[in-house]
Length: 270
Image (tube, rainbow, N blue to C red; front, side):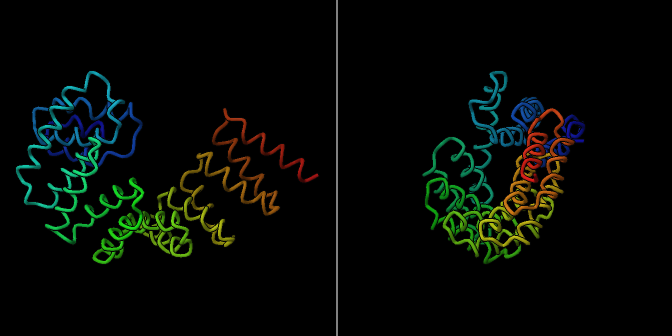
């Protein structure tokens, strides 16, 4: 679907497809977005460049390095031209962050918030920036301000939940992760983090449901399956652990972990 849209004759469809590309491997992202760095329409080139900022600069193949730099320059010039708007300031902040200029990124994101205090995306980016610098109090402040105006945003609840867990405020972290999971019910990673925290808090019934939900969403993920199996093993639930081992084998037949786990469970049952 995305491949078709990215080659559509209508530039609006090409740009929209870039805007909504899912998480992909570096190679796949370059394959899809890279050619559009040479698109005849500036808006498409800019969106292609912004899409490729998901990758570390050293992962961009040589073929795309020069057009990428040119498109980024267009991106910056466009944002500077409309710098009276919060979204443009946020774009400049994101660009500065990508270029490894955290002070400039903070400056631009603060200007975005000053223009529009309800612009939660800029607060989210500020929180990420502060978190990377170990400034957790400032990060928390931005996330809470975002929730003050947009109380139902699952992404913000998720970020705040992770931050509070890092600060060892576990009960509060669970509440925010649970709100994130309710708002994004098909996001396996949120359920996984919630389940892990509930395990740590010995809230077994809730933890089991969260980890089961994780595996239901992403049934072939070995990390998720191993975590659920470990949960059952540590509680002596060998039959359930064996079922998970069988799922590991059926979804990842080339990986020996499932069979090894099954054999280990058999020794415990003797």
